[in-house]
Amino acid sequence: MGLLFLQGAALGFSAAASPGPFQAYLMSQALQLGWRRAWPAAFAPLLSDGPIIALVALVLMQAPAGLLRALQLAGGAFLLYLAYGAVKRLRAVAPTPASAQQGVLKAALANVLSPGPWIFWSTVGGPILARAWAISPGHSALFLLGFYAVMVGVLLGIIGLFAASTRMGPAFTRALGALSALALAGFGLYQIVAGLSGL
Image (cartoon, rainbow, N blue to C red):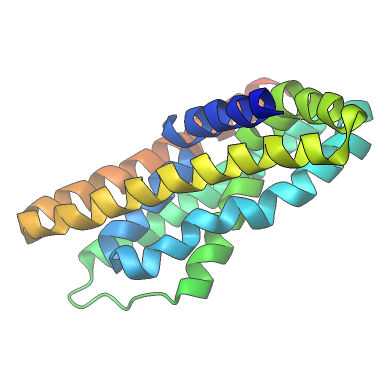
């Protein structure tokens, strides 16, 4: 059982530390809102991954290949929308902070529309979870506990680091904000191109 927990923890660390659209969004939130308002967004995978896991288990394995491409296109468009919002807030004289609830919902939507979680749960996490469930529900719960405890912890650390960088001055903060907006736009364009090229 301990091995399943460690396996989940290692995969959770890898998922959180790998650069991606969700991480870029969290960095953008941390720079704009500060760590107190941005931290709730780190828990968004707890909201969005449940439906993903269920759909992977019940539908995605038998779904047409075009479903993942459609997710890529929708996710790419949403990331471009988030990038546009980040640039707009950079240009504002006095940006209006979003509520923590809005941040969590946008983060959850960004996660659902990103192909990463779908690919992970259909190729890596899903089979491990299924094998653990075959042993006992407790084994699968330990795997999920290890995965999400470490992943959320690393995401909180990322938010804390980027929020702390605001002490470097407004010019540095704006540069990082522009970089995170550029990353969001880059990931969005990549997903759209990848989705279109597969059609």
